[in-house]
Image 1 (cartoon, helix red, strand yellow):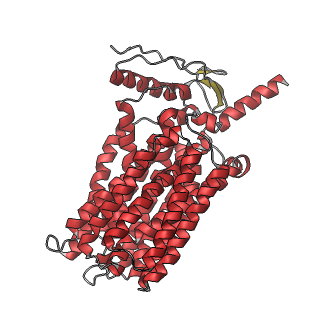
Image 2 (cartoon, rainbow, N blue to C red):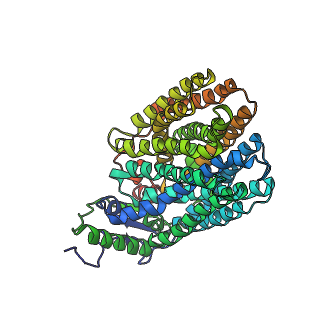
Image 3 (cartoon, rainbow, N blue to C red):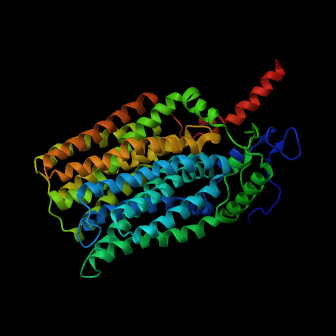
Length: 507
C-alpha cells in the first residue's frame, strides 16, 4: 500500500524567516523531489493537458492550409493565392505579438494563470474566425488566434520543463511538441468531409471546420483545472508554502498511482533568494550577456525550423492544387499522410535525445532534413513528382525535421534560468516566427501565384540552407543537457544571488 504520510520529505526551510518573502533566502529540495519522481499517471495527465496546445495549433494551421483553395472561390471570401499566404503570415504575426506579451506575463504572474488566459483568447478568436464576413475580418481574427497560440507556447513549454523529471525531459518535450501533427491529422481528415460540397455547401464547410478547434479548446479548459502551478516558479516568487503544498500533493498522487514509496531526494539542496519578478534589464543581461552563445544558438535553430515548416506547410495545399492538379476536396488525404510522417519522427526519435544526446540528435536531424529539402526542391522543378510521390518524399524529410524542430523548442526551454524561461521561449519563438514564419508563407504564396513550377526551387533552397546552418550551429554551440536537472543546465538567477550573499559574508 502506498505511504500516506502527510509530512513532506526534505521540505524547504526559509533561512531568514518562518514565512519566506521576496528578498529572503531559502533552502529547498523541490527540484530534486520533482526530478526523482517515477513516471506515473499524473505525468500522463500533464502531457495530455499541456500537449493539446500543439494539437490545437496544428489543427488551426491545417484548416487554414486546407481551406486555402476554397477561400479563393467567389462564393466564399474571394481571396487570391497571395492573400491566402498572407493569412498564414498574419497568424504567425499574432504568434509573435502573443509570445512577447504573454511570455513576459508568464514569468511575472505564473504558468497556470497564463495558460488559462491564452487558451481563452484562442477559443474566442477561433469562433470569431468561423463568422468572418470579409478578407479583413478574417485577417483580424486569425491574427488574434495566433496571439493566443503564441502565448500558449511560452506558458506550456515552461510548465512542461518544470513538471517532468530530468531523465525523460527530452522524450516528453518531443512527444508533446510532436502532437502538433495530431492536430494536423484531425484537421486534414475533417477537411475531407467538410470541404466536400456534396455534404456541405462551399461557404459552410470551411466555417464549421473552426468549430472543431473551439470544441477541443473547451475540453482542455476543463482538463487543465487538474494541473497545479509550477512549484519551481512558486519557490522563487515568495510563495514557498504554496510550493511545498503543491509538491506534497504531487508526491501523494504519484505514490497512489504507482503503489510504491518514493525514494529519498538525497542532499540536492539549493539556496534561492526570493523575488516577486525579474526586471527587464536583468532578463536582457542574462540572455545577451552571460548566455549570449545560447541566445545565438536559439535564434539560428528557430529561424531555420520555422521558415522550413511554415513556408512548406502553409502552402502545401496550394502546391497540390495549382501544380499537381489535386481536387480541393482531396487535399486532406495528402496532408493526413504528411502528418503521419511528422508525428512519427519525434515519437520514434525522442528517446534518443535523452540517451545519444541533444547535440548529436539536433544537428543530425537538421542536416538530414535541410539537405533532403534542397534535393527534393530541385527534382520538383523538373516535374518529376506526382502528388503522391511528393507527399512521400516530404513525409520522409519531415520525419527528421519534426524531431529537429521539437529539439529546438527543447533547447530554448531548458537552456535559460527559471526566472526568465518563459521570456526566453517567447523571444526565440517570436524571432523565429517573425523572420521565418512571416516571410516563408508570403514568399511561397507569391511563388505559387506566378504559376511557374520552377520558381518553387527558390523557396525550397532557402529552407534547406537555413536548416543546414542550424545543424552546423548545433555542432559548435549545442548544449549537452541530457539527464541533467534544469537547475544544473542553467543556474537560477535567484540561486546565484543567494550564493553571492554567502561569498560576501565569507570575505
